[in-house]
Image 1 (tube, rainbow, N blue to C red):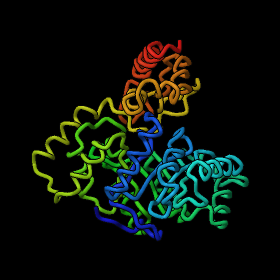
Image 2 (cartoon, one colour):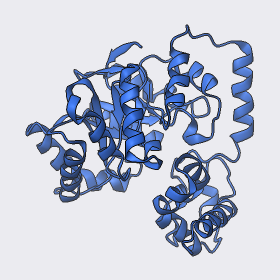
Image 3 (cartoon, helix red, strand yellow):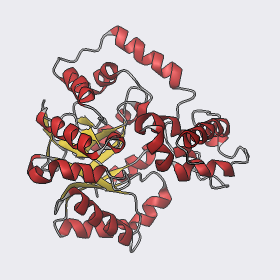
Length: 343
């Protein structure tokens, strides 16, 4: 395992981190075991969020006794100061810590979110104050909208940017990564498996390891999954022509039906939460149907508001048949709910 300074922070992190969503589906004792095993294997960077149910609590159980050995990043999706403060205090309690190494404003993908965050009484006021108080060591931001991410990086307010990057979603390397490097921001890669759409770990990380300044945070839910990816890092990286061909095949397969979560389709005039509804099959695959029906309940129930007006269709840069896809996903959600006895 190699270690790097995360941008202009003073945080030394492992070259591959640990994403905190998959441990949601595990009993606490098993999650703690896996987390502690990952530290034994050399992973020192752990990313979670207030929204990830009991993920923070499991990380706190695993590392509360050895807090200085790990770097913990968490997030708030609140846009107001009061809400962000509540999330922060809850995160500190769950993580069993009096500080958070990296606190991130989460999923800032639309201009209205940024305006709310930076307005008087917005979340930015709260997190800056918390940093002055020592509750936060460093401040970062996450997004799924490339143009917005570039704008956020250019503000100079943040020390890290977290954005999707994989061999399907390569666009960030053209401008976002270059600007982040020029400004010495830490570059955290979410969705190394394209949100669960990619099932070839060796191929996914052959691509990512070409960009050592970017720190991927794959999610782990077993000792075997940790060993699988860390074994890849034990070998020199070599991308062969057949690997490039395989990547291109994935692109051809996913390109016209793969939701990149850019959110250009939103807002829906009828209140459908399109982006999370589009991603329900991947959420169900990652979390298990039993967990996903609760995690995605609000988004999936909003699908019933869809009247197939078509407002979303011309906004989608990938020409996805959004109404048909979300209806199909709703059928899957309904079946999962039936199987779980929650109709």
